[in-house]
Image (tube, rainbow over all chains, first blue to last red; front, side, top):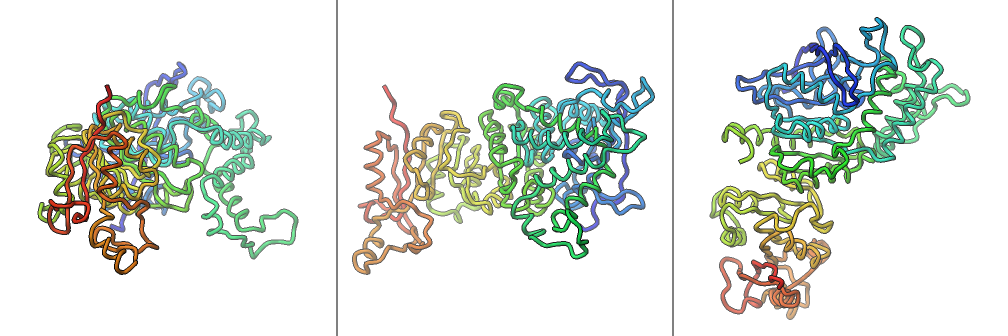
Length: 378
Length: 201
């Protein structure tokens, strides 16, 4: 039970070409992905896990010789919510990312140099289209579940509205049908911080100094929105750092030190242009495609489990309720739970016990019904 | 779940529901009734419940439940999308009873309502002789901790239905162990009603 998914490694899936929603075409796309557990003979136990803005394919376990548990390690492994003794878990880094999948930092085959801003604008649906090709490649006709929080939840909705026939259940967590102006505004401030960094240089910084300051500020804003008033008060109070130098405007409050630390750390592992492209994809996303979402969901046989968190003010619970409402109007069986967490948006990574309870029972039911009836939606 | 272990009111409600119906349980609690309806009556059911802990128990039973407040309305359901909407022991805890009942009658072809009878003789005795707010098996709370917002009797409900032109298809009255046949407003601890909208001409 405590062992987790064990030693894991990244794999790479190459697509010859991918036509984007914009009509543009990307030649030779790579997706980095990891898998945990074993695909059964019927290929009926596969769960696709979708990561959030800064996530990657490394959702669980550790890489050989490293102590780097994946971003949802507490949820994936033997006996965990996504029980690797029963299910086969797949997690891929999104298109446009910088963790092994093709993105703006990748080499443009036409120029031999990084794409930078020559990389086409991508959408959440494009990310999902690339993932679908991976699922095709793995020979999985129907996923047991697609699950993700935040941007991962948007991908879940994209799967549900566009490839419903390929999944038995959907688990969108702390997400929205589309961004509100407030959500777009926070992302825009992050983008502006990056673009205001002189090192950004219109995106052409590869091989030179990185727009670290700008990206760090973007990440700091992000972290503020991921926490809550209460979780910040509990974590930092108004404590001052003990080693503070008597200089003006040093990070003397603990919360300042934390944000700087988070910002500086992020720069080491994330590409600023990827941040621009992915946040734009999030802002542009609209699962309803302009019409009421319940119309897009009409006739779908998949089941849904929607989870939200009370203190999440970045993706307030009413946005999850809108998803539930659309599901119900469309006749989809939807279970909804609002977890009484104080962690804010971060809760989807932290409220392991509650999520494990909800998800493990839900998955068990979907999986069992499939095994009993041989099909879903009796 | 074995039939014998089910509360008497659940048993009566199970008897009111046609097999294979679509059921919505408003205030489904930990889901015992809903579970019984699915297992014993082959119903397709879902519930709404305000208590987070109860939601976890429902999910553990494999039920489809929504965490929410009945008082915010049922706009996520189309007209007549259920054969039965059940409000068992939840009516007295809803703030806007009238709105909730009208909404229940909109989304359900029939509505089953179960509530504690405030005019039960044991309650009357406590008020009359002890001068105290009654605490009985069906109304087990002290005045300072009760979740109940409304205190109604069987007669109150019947006159409400008359006033609102709601059709009472069936009334079942229960005392502690059995059905109460005589003088229900005096001798019944619980009232269960099967109601529906009166057809508009």
